[in-house]
Length: 407
Image 1 (cartoon, helix red, strand yellow):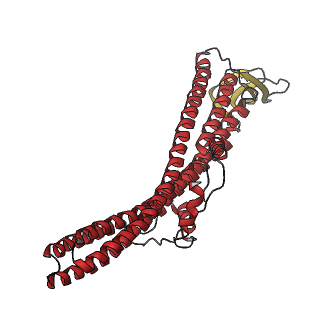
Image 2 (image 1 turned 60 degrees about the vertical axis):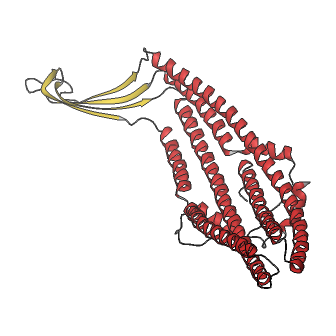
């Protein structure tokens, strides 16, 4: 229920945002880390094209410094061409392994994209929070200025204490310092935001925000997390690549075959006439490798099997980690909604108390300290409301990342 009624208080925020969507698009187009991930995927795709090609044919040429005499004449030179062929299915297994690894790279690119969007949203909402804090601090400064004027008037008419004036001055100076510190914090937050978008540091961040509520049940969200998360799918594809690598290792232990031609250049005999004198020799050839040393092939098979075990364990660990992150984000979402409701109620009550205390002070000139204390309490509640909004949105953004939703 807390996630549903939170939409009521979100209406108090500015109308929703094409701006954040534009920032996300800009980050997706410009971020160097994301470009690097996509380039890694493209490189992996190029490796796929290399795997299904046969070995280059071998062309050999030999010249006899001392010609070998034969019945038809002296052999002067030889030219041979040989093409090797791997064992049946070897190229297919190699291509399958490379294809699965390329698909895994693409899933890692998608994960980097979703994570980048989460980082952009997180930085965006942090800027929103600090700007809201500045706004409330500035409003508080104006109210304190009014209280100071009232305390000064009361002191001048001997109806108040100079301590009230000094106390108000102290609180105003504290507020000014807080505003300066928050403004400095905004600069560092905007720099981080601009770097995520890979744009000039000097550009200001425009906050025009809103929050879309989600209607999925928790079970559906959890299922989508486990089924669709790119890092989980990347590990599954790497497992498939390891299976293909095991098949490749087994097939690599088979012999390779070669087919070729050899052409020998024969000179004519000068000492006698023979049939076919000086006729060149043309000889087809077949060759086969003998994989006698099989230890390396067995080791390659075991390596692929161990790789599959590693990936299976990594997948199980990742599933646990993502589930924990999901539960923590869901708790943060619900907690921030409940805290906002609490602070909203406390703001109303605190304002009522301030009105009563202010009226009493205006009449008696006493208890300004209590008015100031309640005013600072009101400031804290207003700032905590902004923090609750920020926490709610960051939690929703993290759920978007975990459930692979970019918007």
